[in-house]
Image (cartoon, rainbow, N blue to C red; front, side, top):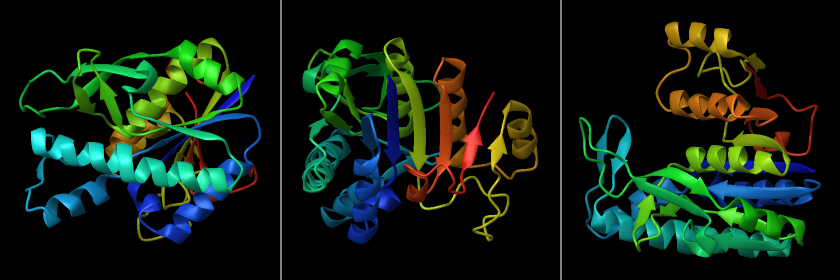
Length: 257
């Protein structure tokens, strides 16, 4: 049985019109599906409004107790329930989940090496049987970027990683395709040229693009998650805009080993 897992980023969530298009396209996708979302910029905006400083190290958020509270409110509350409501309007029977709900995604605190990232979790286990039960009953899970340790502690967890780990875990029961959707048409050769999409990237091409500094910054961990999924039996991985959902002819980047 085919399963499509779609991860959408912050820039697609913040514009109501864009989000509407994303969810319309997602709802039209045939077969079993899961949506994974972040919401980083909205959490930063609320932090600013409340006078809570956002701390970053190497482009990654430090999640202290106050920041975790805001992330839980924004990701697990406002963003998640807004998406679920809009999917219901598109006749997609969605159920919003944090990692704690139905014990869906467990994690442990990220080990302290050069920096302590605070309440940031690394995924250790996905509740495969629970996801399978929902999917086999035509329920579409909508997962936010929060995990838990089964000891009462919530953790901020990278949404790309959550999507990749859920995809890998569910290869046990499904033929899984993973879609990373953002505001670009795919991985670009030139950031200034919206149409300079690199249509196919394998491991060898990826290493060359990194050396040329064409793939850098936030695209590095995204591609790492892509290859991680493929190495662990996810059948197909794509990076591109919302237009690629349900449209095999749309321009996008296909990631292969």
